[in-house]
Length: 115
Image (cartoon, rainbow, N blue to C red):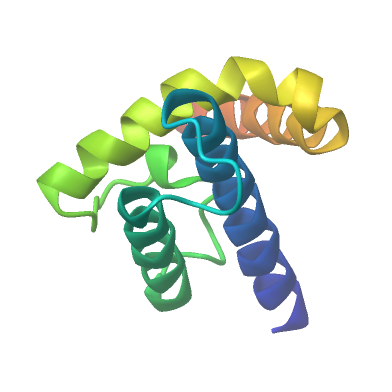
């Protein structure tokens, strides 16, 4: 149970860092998040808290069931597309850990398909 909570916390931190980077660079927010990004961050945290698949999934993009509303899903995609490549410069440890997890998940999914 503690593992799942740690995983949930790491995911929420990662998403919050990506939203903060996006907001700082795109919306030129100096202190904190703009209202739109704050709303997206709160929405993402609620979805993460309520995720029933946290134990088995790595990231929402790998999940078969997408629980985000279409408008919020589009916003989070935009944030991820923008912030993802830049995370290596602003949060290198988190970014490297995320890349390793993604690679491991792809290998796991390939093994599941072959079996």
